[in-house]
Amino acid sequence: MKRFEWKMKQGKTWVVLSALLVGIAMLSPKGAMAQAAPASVHGHVQNAAGQTVTKGDVKLTTDRSSDEKSRKYAYTFPLDGSGNYTGSGITPGDYVAIVFVDGKSLDFIESLPLAAGDNKTADFDMTRKAYMDKMTPEEKKALEEYKKANSEAVAANSKIANLNNLLLQARADNKAGKYDSAITAMQQATAAKPDEAILWITLGDAQLGAADTEAKTAKAAGKPASDPTIAAKYTDAANSYKKGVDLNAASKKPSPETAATAYNQMGTAYGKMGDAKASSDAYDNAAKTLPAQAGMYYFNEAATFYNAGKMDEAAAAADKAIAADPKRPDAYYIKGQALIPKATVDPKTQKIIAPPGCVDAYQTYLELAPEGSHAEDVKGILTGIGEQIKSSYKAGAKKK
Image 1 (cartoon, helix red, strand yellow):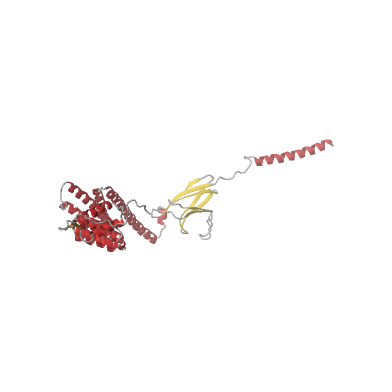
Image 2: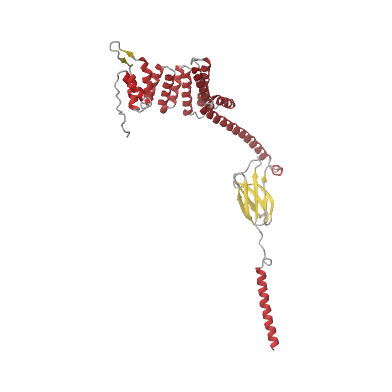
């Protein structure tokens, strides 16, 4: 009896021990069922024209039996701006990979097996022979037409980029006083695209700068301002500006700012080469083109003539500048300076008599610019000719 009871107890002990061993086995890594590591995929997509596809998705599916509308996709990976895609966390399996753009499938890989832990490259190259062979004659024709148009567009864009580089180079050279270099760059640009107004205007700027430099050198050497070589350079500049004006006027969208700038510079060139009529006409055109800036253009005209020693023309231009912008002090200064050489001396009193409008111009300058760069000179002139300074400005007064 005791023996039977022991056997029973021994049996229970075995059952308990066996259960414990099974539990331990289930907890053991060797005994447990390991999960498969996820897979990854990446690649690049280019279309039949050999261009990177930067918009769309690459989708993965194992649903090979459904039609396109009802097919379910396990994973979707977007294309980036470089035409690349990357996908991770993919359950191992044999997938169909499809490229979609704007909701339409463009290309596919029938079998893309991804094993556990894979990091596979899957590119879509639609220029491959197998893809091209499946295209219809109409699709092939459309592709060839597209490639031709695209090739022309690429060439045009390349040309524009080169012109922009030449333009930037010329503007930098003009600013730095490297006028010969700027002329060379803009001559190349105008030869490549002779119908672009801004290129001719920038060429004119370079030619005007070169003419000014030579005129300054000639003056230092005692050569006359009318030297034919210098005049020819100013003529070149004026012709380039005129070309720019004409091209701008003939363009689909003429720019008033471009035209006014060219007219203004043209006026300067003509004025410096001694053609007062052409210069005045050019400045008038600038003012008519941009009436809001008329005061500035007429002042530039007055300054050009004044610096060229043409006092009658300078005084007339100053009057136009004053009429357009009565608050521009330097226009009054130029008017006074252009008129004062005509001052006379009263034989009886020996008093200096300024011509009409001269004193008023000086007085108005002081009213508008009591601390202007020419204020002391103007005060000296007025005092020298016996005129009382009427400016309400008082030295040392605090500004409000």
